Image 1 (tube, one colour):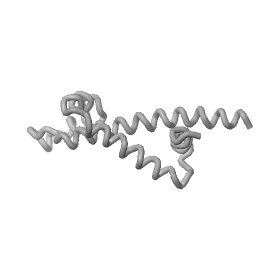
Image 2 (cartoon, rainbow, N blue to C red):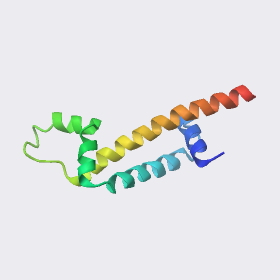
Image 3 (cartoon, rainbow, N blue to C red):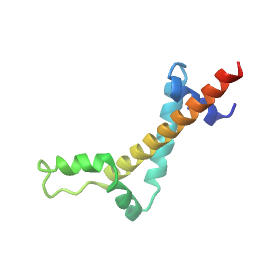
Image 4 (tube, helix red, strand yellow):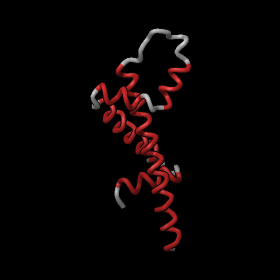
Length: 103
């Protein structure tokens, strides 16, 4: 079983003690990947993030303040992490179904 298969299975069932370690590790990879993107790319991707919409709606409090590059990278990193979790859960469920059918 590969590390991805193990992570996908853990996301699907969330029962292993190692799940939290896997989750933190994958999240840190996503955040690092987002921080390495060029500023323009981050800004474009951030426009489509859920966090940007929330920030925009709440911006009455911060009128005139643009989000920092670090905030934008965080938004994109969290969205990337959410996509990875979604893919892992879907694949983990398929993997677990296959295991159940082979038993």
